[in-house]
Length: 282
Length: 278
Image 1 (cartoon, rainbow over the protein chains, first blue to last red):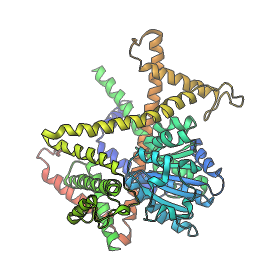
Image 2 (cartoon, each protein chain N blue to C red; image 1 turned 45 degrees about the vertical axis):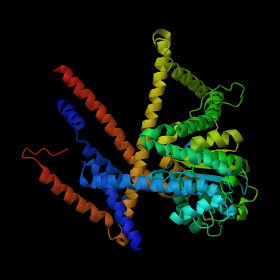
Image 3 (tube, helix red, strand yellow; image 1 turned 180 degrees about the vertical axis):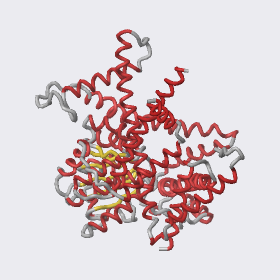
């Protein structure tokens, strides 16, 4: 018994660099040797899928990209999944960005998904990149009030009046659905406060894991139709649309890493109590 | 391809340099850190100037649609164009805007903000700050009140009138979940009521509030861990991709060189007793 307690106590004093190394290994190994662990969609992911699936054909969907390279691993896969689903169901996509980096992400999305997987979809008729406009929530207010005043040209310099799919789109209420891929401020919460709640246009969201707790009250309250929560949310959405992508490939590593972290937390706590017990004894 | 190759090697170097901090503070980390700070400052300054000030401010003060070389207003513009033709291109700024001279007010407020660098004129900055604070408070007041207060209160009420609602369900709406939500909300709010000492029956209720808050913090911690691991996976996926033959095994080469140099540095800095410098 003493040997076990001593072992646990020694684990409690382990140099943190060993922990970093172990975490790196448990993340790296499943990336090389995938285990194919099952992915089951949660209720909130299913809600997003259903919201997109139940849209009328040729619905006008506003896709707002509020993230950059720093959160790309979490949000890019879910945006890929959403766009695949929307284009497969013949909807029109209008891409806006509240963050400047979002425009680079949108261009990457167009290059890697839309142009490669949907070559029959044409720019200006099936999708358009309106691009970044500075101003945070003021931009949202601008889109709600008069999108044409805010966007006179798209990201490629074409006059918005000359873009066929912009016909009949003058303000936010002209859209049928909003999907916000958000990594922070301004993002999902501002879209709820200034656009979706005041106008009643339905919206769903995909956020970084760290934001989920902040956004969840809006989902539970029915103000937002579901949420894709970080990389697992993206993987679940990929499984629902039947197109495995970057999200799915990272889930083995994610799951194993979580198990190891939970074990570390348990060992750390046990070691703490063992140490405390020892110091009280002597 | 050469540009992509150089980009891949730089990306690998910077990623591994940042990761090297997990071993200890070192020169590679310092290089990456300083590059990040400098490039970020430059990038954001440039981004905000070219996406905000030049098109939205100057573009509305001197739009090409109203260009008239004879007018005094565009005479000032032409003089500035002579100084810097990229910011003030010949013939006015073509960003699809009409002329709005009311934008002279934010222009003046912006200049006032910049005057804060001069001690004697720094009081001007208060006007700009006052405008920003007032505008933001007014803009956000309605949004918060509508979505965070009224809608949240309405949505956390028990819907006894719904005959289809189940008594118990783990996920989704049910009477049980509604009651838990109601108790959690009230107990959590009462915990932050500091005008009464938290003891007796009131103390027991606030204790329940603490438990709900602890569950919330635990969930936040779990999501934070999940997010960080996702970002780590993202970097590892890139490092694996950049280790391919088309990138001449950038990851392996840089990793080996970095480990050798860090090992050599640790060996040189070791004191006779074997304590490494932290």
